Length: 143
Length: 134
Image: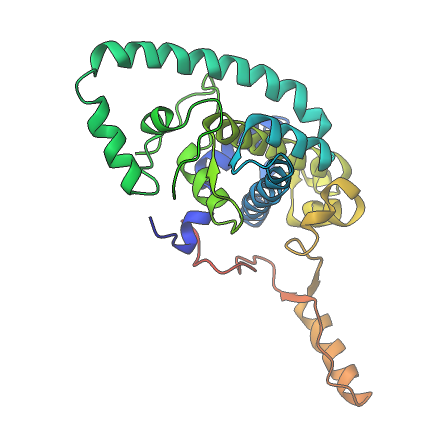
């Protein structure tokens, strides 16, 4: 999937909501401030990714894993995020596990089809499909 | 298709697919495990909240019950944790001041480059490449 410049931005509506949740009720956020925060968030992703990738490379792995991201947070001095992230990860893993079981029962036939499809292309944009090709351990998925 | 953000009950609101695109734009990265993707998205949300609340708390915008660009830029400059943002959140000066600076530099015989962005009140000029956002 080719990246268009817009794709490196995060959706405005979601960003705005997250900001509002962090501020007292009724505080105004200028369009400019919102836009700046959105850009900052994209930069944060890049910075975190680069940092996490260094940890992966140190471990001689090609796939970024959860530990790499947590190590990156430490390195970037966002230690305050680590505990809440670990908690959320637990919940997320349980959710994913539940979905997988449900899927297995339903889509037994189409499983192999989907796996072939996702191998030829880089990204389906489909989160649920991604689960199937990327396990919680390392996998050398081709890009 | 990316998940549409539902209510505040969702574990994460930022779309994982979009986060993934940004992560993959990083040249050295080959693949990303699902947990790592989730954590990055979640961390980004925490980051947005932290940046917003910190800037509001330490800035002057709250005198008018607002969070302003200036609050953010101030944070990037003053707080070490946010210094990686300094380049994309530069301090602003009034266009008139900037023009005066240019004139002064000319008079001094230098046609120096100024890093300061010239700005009017509402500046939607993105420093980064993209077209005006939706």
